[in-house]
Length: 255
Image 1 (tube, rainbow, N blue to C red):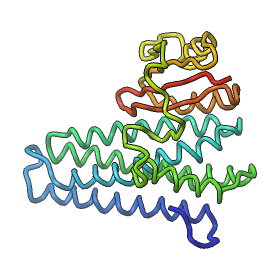
Image 2 (image 1 turned 120 degrees about the vertical axis):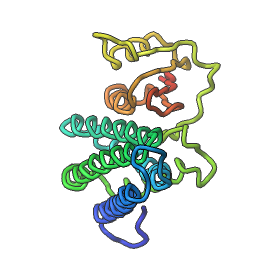
Image 3 (image 1 turned 135 degrees about the vertical axis):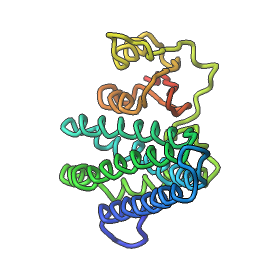
Image 4 (image 1 turned 120 degrees about the horizontal axis):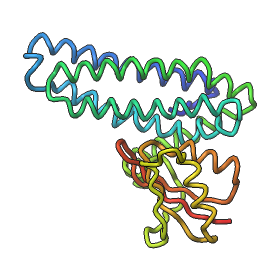
């Protein structure tokens, strides 16, 4: 993901997007071809497993690296918050579709879910290429630095240094011990109360050094960005469970 020369970081990221798109489309095309050599309503295809391997090994780590770096930078800019919040939600939808591919009981269901995944993924990276990256540059964000951080986050997520596992998510914060978490905030049945309202209210009751466990039915990363923007230096986050269907994050008050 990192360039070894002085290439434009936007060009490097776009090229990586195109490689992911090409690899995905090739695998999905092979899956659809397999419909011609097997009964579409019985059994599954090894091509579906190949798509899941691509998602787990490349696309999901890339998405988490984006959340950890590029999206975090974008969330500091008020005009980009709605865009990056929506794009983070698209990541969650992509992971839902990946699960549909993995759990499909027939080749036809695999192929349909894979086609939906490809359509959404392609539209998603087009928005990053055409809107998000130019907006970050226009705002003066150091994209060379972002690219370097993405590279390190990708390697950490995939365990290249043995520092992270897939279920750890993209956060590289100091590990927060479970024994330090006296409060559980479950927002899955929040009703009229938003996840942000419930979490911030609970956080305000904590003394410095105390923590809470946030349980949500969506990725809480945008909420973390909100904390960093509105309460800088007050909290430490560790994403410990990556859904769907459930996300869990440990949040410690440090100031």
